Length: 145
Image (cartoon, rainbow, N blue to C red):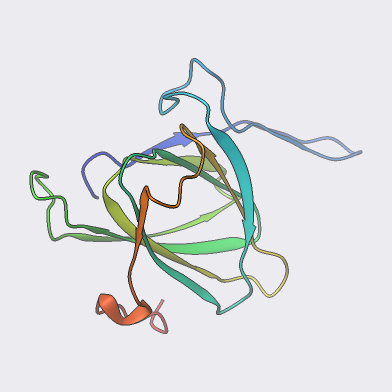
């Protein structure tokens, strides 16, 4: 596990007519503030990598499908500097992953149906706040899951 990444179990209320899936409340662990919420889809086998937010805290949820995430800690003062962490998010178990600034990440869709992730960020997206690297910047075997 990379220092600062946390998981919060989320409520899923099932009913015959459909489900309610909670995301975040302003008194939840991981809630820093509100900047924006966005959704992203990723097709099965498609990889979106690499990004690192310098200031933004991410609160990631995958309510539909399944997404495989890889995180790389290159923060110089981190006790987990150099570590790689891999995790799958989906609605089972339904949970939120909070990721502090400064950690590189990428993700890949696993389900043949829709893979939907959402991020509740503490700041509004700013293109000057994010850094990007080429897919091959880190030695990750995306085919060996």
